[in-house]
Structures are given as structure tokens and as C-alpha cells.
Amino acid sequence: MIDSPPGAPSSALESKHRLAAAPTVPATGFQFDLDVPQDARKSLALAWLALGLAALLASGLFSILLVLSRTPQLQTLFPVADFFRVALVVHVDLSVLVWFLAFGGALWTLSGTTRWQPLAWVAFVLSSLGTLLMCTAPFIGAATPVMANYVPVLDGSVFLGGLLLFGLGVALLCLRSMLAAAPVGMHVSGQGALHFGLNAAMVASAIAVLAFAWSWLTLPRSLDARVYYELLFWGGGHALQFAYTLLMLIGWIWLASSLGRPLRLSPRVVTLLFAIALLAVFLTPIIYLAYDVTSIEHHRLQTLLMRYGGGLVIGPIALAVLWSIWPLPRLEPAARPLRTSLIASLALFCVGGMIGFMISGSNVRIPAHYHGCIVGVTLAMMGMVYRLLPKLGFAAPASSYATWQPVIYGVGQLLHIVGLVWSGGYGVQRKVAGTDQVLRSAGEVWGMGLMGLGGLVAIVGGIMFLVIVLRALRSQHAE
Image 1 (cartoon, rainbow, N blue to C red):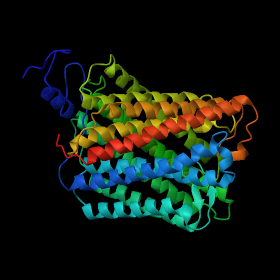
Image 2: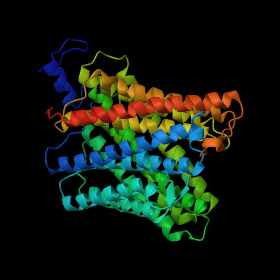
Image 3: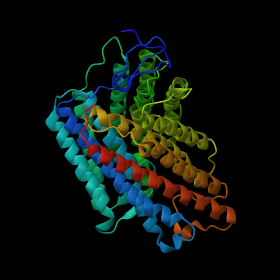
Image 4: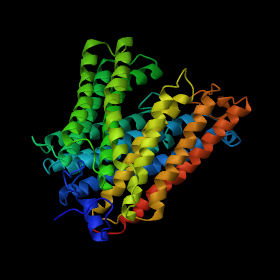
């Protein structure tokens, strides 16, 4: 069969076929795709996806309280600063830790074999119970919120017990994924390259679990709670950033290929880039062996490792993806949500990265930086969910609402970030809310007001995503 030249008209059936199974090595570039098996792995992957979506829903409820507690004129309704901190702890852990790793669990399940299925279900049950405990902890007993980087906590038995159960579930998930990993092979295809990237993200998560355990075993519990939890999650938190970034890069490549636009990077080059990031992760245990967890060197090297080890691979892949999707072609309705998710993810992640160079001192520019990067990962995962649904046998989100959802969510988060950067220029401090913010000037008030407006718009976009996905899950339609 001879392929039609670029721009030639094609039937809806041919367009749908190209979206589902593009050729491996077209003349102008390379295609990357993830195959979705229709066996026992499907139900397990759906379970992990459901856990991630439930975590997103719960985090959205807490985010409404967060935005209201920091918005001028409304913040006086929440005079207790600890209310903001409690909501922030649960929101961050659900929207980042649980959502990202649960979605990773779905992809690792689909890319592996069917071996060790009972262990996989044990991992899921433990993670689900842990998530449930973390959600209910704010309403069961008193606990002090500790705003540690990467994994903030409520210093109480219910929340910490839930976090421990979730961590054990993720540890078993990584162990089972290693035992059931499918071989990539010597001749790396587009699918093989993405499988290697998924395996690299899984190994990075396993190293993060190892780092958390190492810190827990070596840190003296007599330390002040703020210092203790900051040091406890510092090393493993940095390793998790590699896992999140790898999942996002896989999303970029997969979504770009799903638009029928071949990538100008070969599968071998993509695999090499993923391997560079993985090599950087393997330096984490060496840092633990060389320096004490409480030392300045340990703290500094972990930061440098993330900055340079992860940053080396993002640029080439981002440029290749942008080159492949430009100019923007006309697409079938089922592919349009994929494109808007991809573009919004690229934009927000780049904005977050650029804000990182503007940080000085401890103000709200810091959350603006990581909000951009985290939202970039979230948007890539939203696009992958849209891509996965028809492969799992559900209806493809092809409505205009699905096309505009990443735009609304992305624009809302962009306004949120701009408001934080604006306010950070006036020195508004991070991790405070209500009357503790002490907004003195009109500029501070307008900046935080823009932050609140953007947050509310982003919440609308998040609710749209959940509604769109739930509607698709109710409609069986095999691809």
C-alpha cells in the first residue's frame, strides 16, 4: 500500500487507523506508540487510573478552599492560618504524589507482562487505603501541618499511617513492575523506546522509595519536625522529579505521534536521552553513601543532580516535538484534545522553568515555578488519558469541550502563576494565607487577586476534565 502524500485528503477510517497504529519508520521521521493489551492488565490499569482520578477529584475540593483562603476580600472567611496549611498539605500530596504515581502505575501495568498479578493487586489495595487515610486525616483528630518540600505532611498518626501505606503500595508496585517488565530488545522501535522510558520512570520511583527509607533509618527523630520532614523527603523527592519528568516526556512524544506527525528523533536517540536521565537517578544512592543526610553537601548535590541531570534531556525532546507539530494541521475531532493538551503542557512547563531563573528569596515566585512545571506534567497526563480511553475500549473524548478543556485549565494556571510572580515581586511570602499574608500595597492585592481568579478558572478546567473522562468511561466504544 502506498502512503498518500502529506496534505492529501483521506477518509475518516484511514485517519482513525493512522491515529491508532501509525507506521514505525515513515520516510520523514519516526512514529512512537504505546500498545494497550486487552487482557488481565487492562482491569488493573483501569484500577490505577481510577485511583488517580479520585485523587484529582479530592485534591480539587481542597484546592477550592486553598484559593478562597488566599484571595483578597474572601481570605477573612478563613482567619485560621492552619486551615490553609492543612488544605495545602492534602491538596499537594493528592494532586502530585498520588495522581502522578497512580497514573504511572497504570502505564507500567500496560507496558509490562502479566506475571505477578496478585502482587500487583496487593500494591493497588495498599495505595488505595493509604490515599483514603490521607483524605480523611484532616477530619480525624488534630495534626500539625508541616510544609516540607516535595511531600508535605500532617504530623499525626492517621495521615502518616496513610502515607506509609501508600509508600508501601508504590514500593510493591515498582517491585512487581521490575519483575514483570517486558524486554525492549536490541532493535529499538518507537514503542520500545517509550517502554524503556516507562521502565526508567519506574526505576526512578523505586530509587525514590529507597532514598525515603534510607533517610528514615538514618535521621535522628529528635530533630525539630520541620527540619526532620524536610530532610526526610529531600533526596527521594528529587528522585521522584525524574520519574515525573520522564512520564511527561513520554506523553509529549506519544501525543505528537498520535497527531500523525513523525518525530525527527530516532527511537535510539530517544532511548539514549531517557538513559541519560536514568543515569543521573543512579547517582542518588552514591550521594547517600558519600555524605550524611543532614550535611550541606547532600542537600546541594541533590539539587544540582536534578537541575543538570534532568535538564539535559528536556530541551532536545521539547524542540523535536515542537518541530514535528509545526505547522498545525487540520485534525479529526478525536485528535484535537491531544494537540491542545500537548501545546498547553509544553507552554506551562516552559513558563515554570523560566520563572525558576527569577527566584530570589523565599516568596511566592517559588510556588509559581513549581506550579508551572507540575501543571505541565499534569496536562501531559491529561492528554495521555484522552489517548488511552479509546485504546481501553471507551469512547474517545472528541467534543469541543474536550478540545477546550486543556486550554481553560492551562490559561487558569497561567493566570495563577502570573499572579504569584507579580506578588512575589512585592515580597509576598510563600506558604501563608489569610491575614498572615499582610497585603499592604495595591500591587500585592491585585497580584494575589489575579492568582485567585486564575486558580478558580483552573478549577473549572479540572472539573471539566473529570466530567469528560467520566462520560467517556460510561460509553463503551472499542477503537
